[in-house]
Amino acid sequence: MKGKAFLTFLIFTTSLCNAQNLVPNPSFEEYLECPYSTAEFHAQVVDWYSFAVTPDYFNTCSNELGGFAGVPSNAWGYQWPITGEAYA
Image (cartoon, rainbow, N blue to C red; front, top):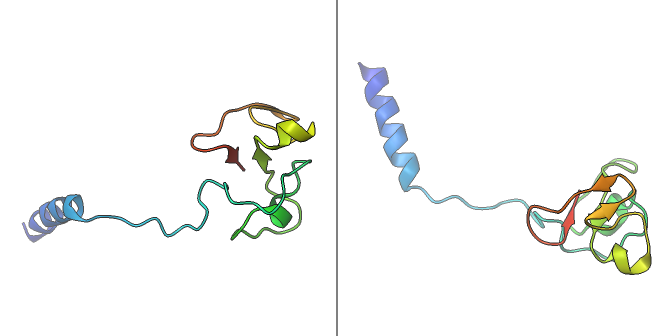
């Protein structure tokens, strides 16, 4: 009985709470220079760090450079970002 009451309490209180986005640069929109190749995530994306050359980074500005990291068409296929102009 106490478990059901506690679960009901949690369901109602979580619907009243507002969440915060604690992830810096969540859409990878802030970058230092436009990527030419896909392996530039660790060197170009602001507030994100990675080990070696993964993950791949794609941005619409690469279309103007004729690089392999363009959006939506790039070296690995065709994909639009969910939000903004970049994805990893």
